Image (cartoon, rainbow, N blue to C red; front, side):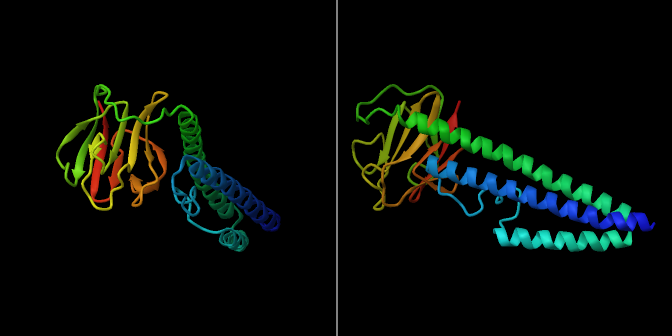
Length: 229
């Protein structure tokens, strides 16, 4: 029994060290995710990665929790070594699973940012010349003047207040050329045209963003759903 109690403190220290190492890795993932979102034009959020499966804490909060982990682990170890071992394993497995999820999310964001940067290099200058509609590609009006309507998209679509836009929005705060939806390198993107009111995709203010099926696009009081097929 005395031997097990002697082992409790080293185990508590080991658990705390592992917690801090995993927290540092979470910081690394957060930094990678933040830079990728800046690159892609999506408005970065504070503690981007931790906003997914991990708490939105600052560094000092994580270190504070690390100190609490040490104290709680030591207290449990004084009561029962095997209980400390079980609680430690479960806690580290749960935290590790969260890190795996965040790693996968970061990889997705970084990959999309790279695709978006590559696609921007291939954007052709916009012209008002109409091109044939792309089969199965459309915007469905959810809110605003196009509510309930399905609008077919071409490979290059300008949205705005101007008569030359493919999709015209007659709203006072909509810019003449507000946003552009374009097909490039096998993917669909929306690019804000330095508008006054901004362009939102799935609730996030963006300058450029890859579109997925069912993506929600909001421009002022008008909202669309992007559909493929």
